[in-house]
Image: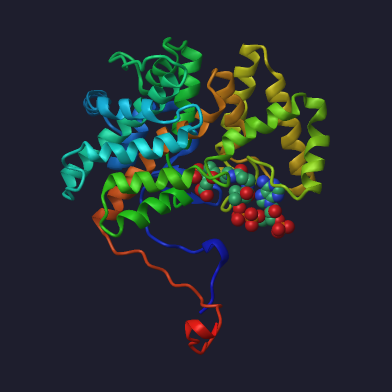
Length: 371
Ligand SMILES: CC(=O)SCCNC(=O)CCNC(=O)[C@H](O)C(C)(C)COP(=O)(O)OP(=O)(O)OC[C@H]1O[C@@H](n2cnc3c(N)ncnc32)[C@H](O)[C@@H]1OP(=O)(O)O
Ligand SMILES: O=C([O-])CC(=O)C(=O)O
């Protein structure tokens, strides 16, 4: 039996949700560049779940379905208030709250197609409510209910800050959501599929996926990128900082990718957004520092920025707290997880690979008193 460390290059399933072929990313056959420039996040979610773009009527009714499902039980809010909230990372809060939601959903364990679709709607609608409620509660503020006339992107920013975003912020945030929505068999999506392939429920699949996204080698990298930029503080200090990190054999967060070899097609969009937004906020130093790091890491190691690198300065420019960056990734990626979960159920087989045994052979049993 041979093995590939980290399952590199292994094709573990068939999927029609998204593809990465020759470094081109598509959702259901639509190039990510076209979607990033034109689509609303709501259209993208519909596309991922239904396989086609919605017409006007379908989009209206889908948007309404999401809007009607966004309230979370008061008990979940009360539980949040009982946590040692100033010490809880928002990703841990999100993981726990999503698991908690299942306890209040009478159809959590129902496995028919319609019930699973209804749960998908609820989870997509309720993740923003959880993340923004948590962010506000720990600031000593009350959670804010979403407004019906606002888009998914605008509502998130509104529920977070209490202010309706301007058009530029809304557009930028919408684009970031679109860019993060799905990504073939990334670690968190694979986790979700493995979980539900045991015929466990949708909530369990999403809870497991949040746990996988949280790690710094995956979604957790975006928060750490901002940590690095803040530590560097000035574009002139960037090269020296990275040189020292290389000497310590540290990984530079936001660089490298298991699949892309010529670069992550999402990064150019985020880089341009970072340029524009930091210009507007008058803090172009974050963009300039990021570009310096990008050029230096590429020159020295041939590593290119991934989706997490420029998203850090984008979210920072939108006034978002740094530990909310990865939860935002989850608010978008849950659309992809759910698409994959529904796809997995539709043609399920238990996912159970093998391990190559490298432990000791033929050991003799030794009674306890003789060890
Ligand atoms: C949304 C996302 O999940 S995108 C990824 C987000 N994660 C990050 O940005 C964290 C930093 N990046 C990394 O850790 C990696 O590039 C990963 C996890 C994304 C991909 O990992 P893998 O395909 O397993 O590559 P692996 O970690 O084996 O690295 C291969 C080589 O490149 C080096 N390398 C890879 N990424 C980096 C990096 N960011 N900084 C420095 N060196 C790196 C490794 O040290 C290794 O070098 P070696 O062969 O001399 O030991
Ligand atoms: O695909 C991956 O391995 C990681 C990634 O870029 C993503 O999940 O968006």
